[in-house]
Image 1 (cartoon, rainbow, N blue to C red):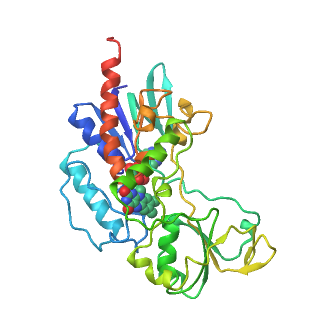
Image 2 (cartoon, rainbow, N blue to C red; image 1 turned 135 degrees about the horizontal axis):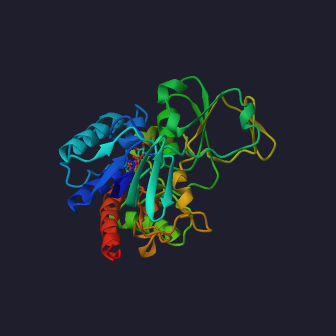
Image 3 (tube, rainbow, N blue to C red; image 1 turned 90 degrees about the vertical axis):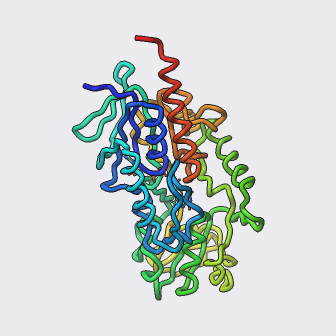
Length: 352
Ligand code: FAD
């Protein structure tokens, strides 16, 4: 069976950037992507999310900037990815969901159902969207109302007339409250006191936030989301909810869930119809388990003090869109770094 120089898993922003740069360097590779169509996770974002609601989506490397204001993110970003894949003739195979990556005497074997691909190096670009994180609270399974995670957010109209409890201290929770509080009854709970930014989100502030995640990845700790460490901001579309007090009435986590509401630590009860778990995501890296890349601290340690993309435990593996590069701009840069990392692996390899 053919042994390729590299395989990229995932064709979101990070995988496309990696493929673009691998191609530029003349490195033979394929990209395996689980989705039926181009667009990475963007194709699955909720319909109400427009390009005015996102926090800035960077163009792919060398792509032409397009005016996309106000348009649906789950439509225009996938369209631009499709065009990019075509224009750059990227070698993408889909749908292919990778189950496992194993090592066969120095060759990486990528298993997907009955199929397998072999390569000398691997660029993992599988994002987080397929790994929604749902914490467990006693009684959750007894709730007779509706519980949903960010991945299933159906847009504000669905919640009209319902009492909605939004759980989570990140950007998604803030956005959901911004859309829901003006039209229905909301409550907000977070595990920790939210950290608000009142200064402008400058490039320096962005770099400082990324540096915090890099430090974690350098130590092999599970990465936090970059957005999680930037602090929260209210945008014009959240001002009405703020005026109504949606962000002032935040409470600490409830103790348990009951069939028709939640029980607070002080014993009092709160009836709710819907619980929205805006509790984030984890890196989708389960298929890499046979390679034993995780450190004892639970994360995958990356080189260059967490600024690189090469797995310290196995330099054949690059991780992009992971930790500090889990943003569109970070994914772009990581794709380039990873392609160079792959090239370096071959430069270092002893001649056969
Ligand atoms: P994805 O876009 O998730 O792509 C991963 C690809 O890998 C998918 O196509 C998936 O099908 C595939 N895949 C996964 N597992 C497998 C497998 N086992 N086998 C084969 N293929 C697989 N960032 C910003 O910069 N600005 C924003 O405004 C912004 N808004 C966001 C809003 C939300 C709600 C969320 C959740 C994230 C947001 N981000 C934003 C983060 C940003 O979307 C990602 O960091 C960025 O798009 C990087 O994408 P990616 O390529 O790493 O992952």
